Image (cartoon, rainbow, N blue to C red; front, side, top):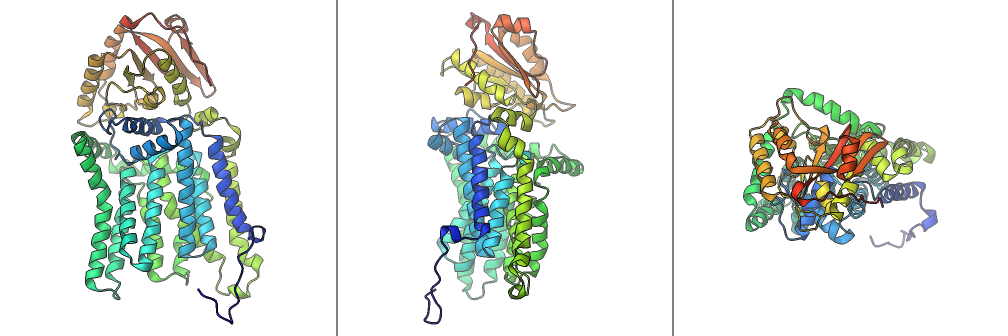
Length: 559
């Protein structure tokens, strides 16, 4: 706005003249970034291994679903390929990319909070998201697809808010495109995209100041842009010759996967997932709940603005629901909507109706209370965030899952086989393919589906067995860990019976046996493995083909 003669020009405050809330925002964002930097070498877990391996293959010109089967859409695979290209195909490179992604998401929430309400709302939204998105209880230190979906839903929300303000078609198309990309990152993003489509349609039809043709045109443009990423994805996969596999895994099998949990059991699964995922953010969540109520009493928001903010939060909550599994990291996708609601609560409480007649300390108490709760939340994460090594943090987070051990097993395979030789992992540890930089001799990088009570389970086992027998890999890693198979009471155990007979063609030459949270035993070479006597805990067992002997005796050093 151009100043007039009776409106003096106000200079922007200098760096050291800014309010304490500005410094608090900077402090929290820098602190969380420092935590992520300190834990860059946090061992890769299963999902990261899958995304990293698929991204690795894409950089080699190998399309998704050719050597890596899974029911997820390929958006996160492409995002990982970009991260690996920019920062390197390592655990540190992946986590550096996640640091950049989550920081950008927090900054977008800051911008959106300021646009909707004020500086306070933006500060709260950004810090709420940054702290919660790095929560160990949500598995936030790992690079999950929900981080990427949250990034694109937040970007889509920013563009959508701007499109509502100016009605320009390029920003309308951009908003729809971003929501469409969120779906490619994680199918759960479709819930928020559906909300965006419904809200945009209703809001556009209600803008009587525009001609009917313009209103309908904007709706068509928004919807077309949202569909475009999926359409382009299908075209690319069809041209690459893997569309049939893509459709089977992401539609046919995914439908069966989603039906495994009966509706009657969903409350139990929700309780189990939410109480673990939200434990370290339980003091921050009431701010979001308060925002869902207080925004209706905030005179700064118009009716549609209130509906937009409330419904975005509701859609974010519902994005956790679709398959009723309620995994811990699913709750990461709800954070952008909840962060904005928390911002609305603190902003409203800090601006009572008689704001001009209220002293500054009285107005600042909601912000101070929120800052104190953020500090307490950070303290609940202090053990992992500030004291533990990356390996210790992984063990605290994932208990006996052999993620730190996978790095040394991958080094062993690297030392004793060539890059051209395929690898087989009998179990669900795709990080071994990524870390060893070996191609899988089978597309079945997960074995969970084989254990599920669904009609494709036996077919999957037979195909994996055929791939192994045909390829005869030098090394097979058998994962003796219940969490890597997740058997059901009525699981088909054909593949275990087959392995008991087939492994006579192989000799165990290495083992990493996780006996407890602080004890892992390694044995390298057939003699040492035989002397050790076999797995006693959660183990990675490396088998070498008998006609590829002599048995290796050397062991990898730990960097």
